Amino acid sequence: MKVLIAICLLVIFTSAIVRAQPSRATALTRAENREAEQSLSRLGYWTGPIDGVFDAGSRSALIAFQKWQGREATGQLTLDELEAIRASAFPRAREIGYEHVEVDLDRQVLMLVKEDGTVRVLPVSTGNNATFVDEGQESVAYTPRGRFLVYAKDIGWKTGSLGSTYYANFISGGVAIHGSRNVPSEPASHGCIRIPMFAAPEVSKLLKIGTIVLVYDNVSFVSAKDWVKNPKLKEAALAKVAADDDYLVDSTSPKPKSLATRKLRSKLIRA
Image (cartoon, rainbow, N blue to C red; front, side, top):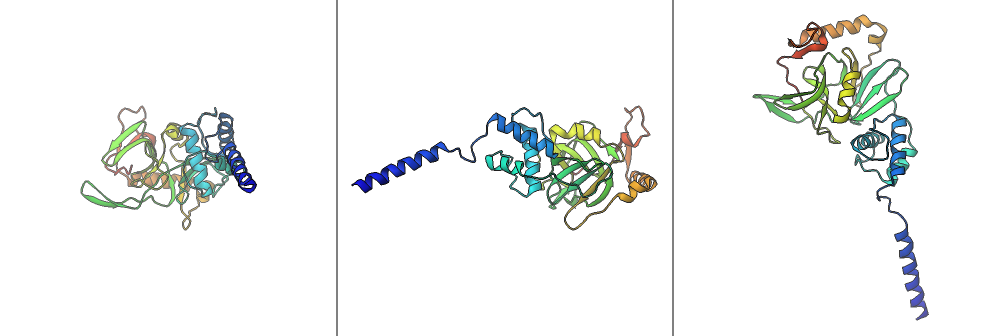
């Protein structure tokens, strides 16, 4: 009987200890949320306001962190995720020494890279490689790899047969970096590079006409350092991509001859 009572007491005592310990999946305190936001921002992940409220910007930064680190992209801040953030290193661009944008298709992130190598990182969703039909034409939802230049831009919302884009920045035909209400953790677009809505207007301001964009995966990477060393090569590439596409000049622009104000007339926008 004494042994049975001892066992019962041990079970009760153990259960009490377990209940007293916080679950690693339990919602964190506001102070812990704020610490996570501050740390993510310091590392270079694009957050919203650092206020301890885990909002859309905070979740976006966490997802970008999880993608970069190869963790499950849940967007849920737990004690395990906070500890991983505390122990993590800075994300690094493939090239440094000049301002540009990098899109890592394997990790599904976009990095705005400064000359000194510091980055701001956003999660993206790119082409899912599925076949689709638009206006009777069959195409593949493919995001091209290579080096590109931002050569045309849209302001605000634009709607096409494949969906809507928000502050689109065109880099290749109908492929653009643009805001979207739907940015899942996996590739899901028709070829465009979707970014979170909250960041799209500021990204558009940063991506001036002529901004270099490097898009790559683990088997393909094209440097743009020769463009940086010889700006005339970049100018020629920008002129060529402008000549290769069919444009409609925006009559509402005060500078209708500027590349920045030209609109795509017949290109398929791969939202």
